[in-house]
Image 1 (cartoon, helix red, strand yellow):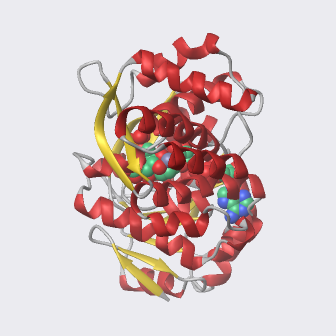
Image 2 (cartoon, helix red, strand yellow):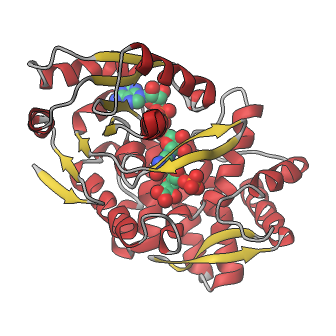
Image 3 (cartoon, helix red, strand yellow):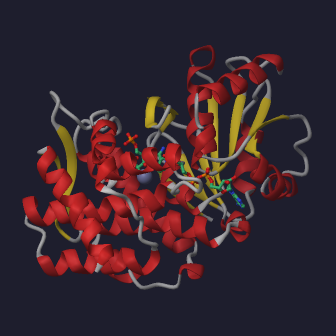
Length: 355
Ligand SMILES: NC(=O)c1ccc[n+]([C@@H]2O[C@H](COP(=O)([O-])OP(=O)(O)OC[C@H]3O[C@@H](n4cnc5c(N)ncnc54)[C@H](O)[C@@H]3O)[C@@H](O)[C@H]2O)c1
Ligand SMILES: O=C(O)C(=O)C[C@@H](O)[C@H](O)[C@H](O)COP(=O)(O)O
Ligand SMILES: [Zn+2]
């Protein structure tokens, strides 16, 4: 078993979840509640129960799956269940699921009775390499992503590759967008090693490498005053596209799919405004187009996308904020881009996929 030390807690890479059993036996929680969605109830709760045969006294809260449910209504449901179950400040919430469950569960726990303990057991690739670590918790409001939330660190994170076995390919690829991002912003060698890999070969070593990159960034800047903004590469435009798609498409883009589009557009801005070479831009584009389908969208929605970007948390005094690459493996933040340039990057994407 391997462990990464994060912000006052451990991230365990442990397929047996024995470390979870030890963790629970060392703490005297008044009550344990497990938050799942309907898919992790079926696919992940049985593995959790097998790993903890001696844990019998816990309650389960179930929410509907998917980004459309990462909102205040479902959060109220979680809070109400915690009240009904008699949770107090010495209780523990175990978030067993993907990023929707870890984000919303972390938020619900961090605000319940002004804060109770929670742990993350991420069950998607995306939540293992990214969402479960670092303490960003939150919910969406309408189609504005993660606009209500807290920085609240879990007591521990337990990562087991066992959970990934039931994940479908589309979800695996979505999580891979954040893996590619980690290489692009921080580690050229890692990017080169993942950019053409067979996605079914994702293993603990890869997850651990991604977590170690994210962890180095968040330990230096837990509350995103500066450096942490690089973890947001692709997200200014990506979140706008994700939010737009959520409300307007019958089969909305997943987070990773949207930020893959965002990383191509922001790759273009990196080339135009921040010194990323044309060769490296083309390299980045080829990588994303290898794994991700094109997203067709019309310039008629640019105004709506800009409206969403006006809510980005990196903005300052009405200027839209970006993290941009200067080369593969290196990223700068607090770069403010004009609306004309943003639209140019959307046009670039549209022309690219029309070729
Ligand atoms: N807090 C952060 O730092 C951070 C980082 C990245 C992304 N996020 C957020 O994470 C969310 C996306 O997370 P996600 O991609 O995990 O989505 P998700 O939680 O919606 O999970 C994807 C789907 O897979 C199902 N699922 C989960 N585990 C499964 C398993 N083991 N087997 C079968 N099905 C399973 C879920 O029920 C869901 O239908 C977004 O809301 C995004 O904003 C947060
Ligand atoms: O941990 C971070 O910091 C990130 O930015 C990671 C992102 O991949 C993630 O999507 C995060 O939820 C975005 O946060 P937000 O502050 O832009 O909502
Ligand atoms: Zn993300």
